[in-house]
Length: 90
Image 1: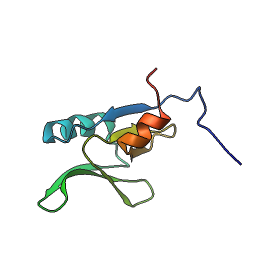
Image 2: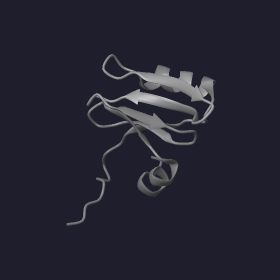
Image 3: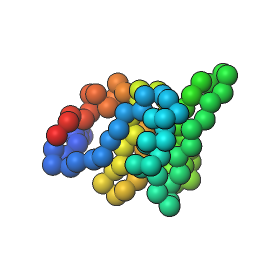
Image 4: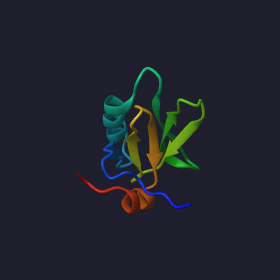
């Protein structure tokens, strides 16, 4: 069976520009007592955000990816290419 996202559901979303300042803005806007967001940088992986998901695993957000707050308040990341194919601005 095929499914599509409901047209009437709206989410809060913000694209991360890859900077430390952008990470602070996302952290202030999306972080909750249940989910933490951390800015990390390594010589190998570069800069990324790590979101501690409600399920306990870490989601890594790379520059130009999107951070979303879902309908249940959960925070997760979506790759730029997937976001552009799936969501539209309202």
